[in-house]
Image (cartoon, rainbow, N blue to C red; front, side, top):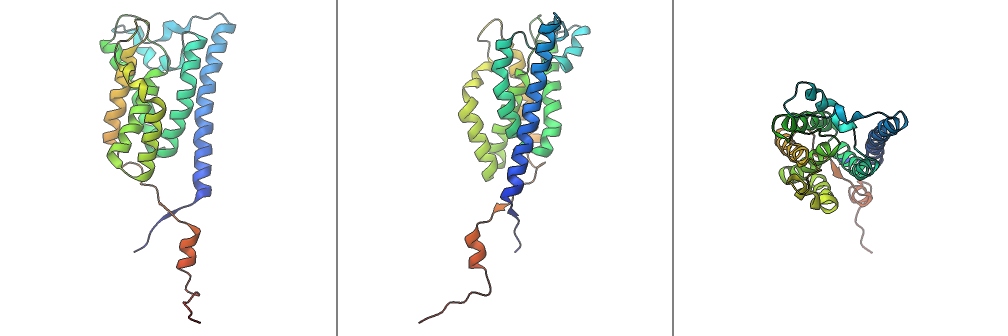
Length: 216
């Protein structure tokens, strides 16, 4: 029976690429916020405003806009860490699930949320977190379990954010992002192939046909 074995160099390259994309995405958020401050803009009006036709455009723009530097700072590390985990663990699914979470959380907010402008990347953050965690439960391969436990260890306490804990926080974005992440975990659980088995150097030595047992 043939087996596929992972290449540590390929894994390292994939991890670096995933991290670079996640950092670049976070950098874009900072560029937008700095441009807003520099030019005196009020970008909050491009957020999602529930049940308003103009507010529909916020589904696309809201994840890019943050109310303050502290708001953006709080979202930066999760964007980088969860983005890296998602892109590294599920590169094919990420191309589908990121726009799906943005759309699903935004449309859920537009339909059901309180009448206010909803902005920030937290809906995407919650969606990525719940997607990765649910994938670990569904797939049960070593990488999926490891990534799921990592996400739970780092951000498990965020789960309470799907409930109304403070009036100025869009728990609706969190909730609909989380729901979308879980739904797409079920839909895409087999979209990415399971990682190949890791091969160790001593296994090559054991299988070397040139080596024979000798007795003295």
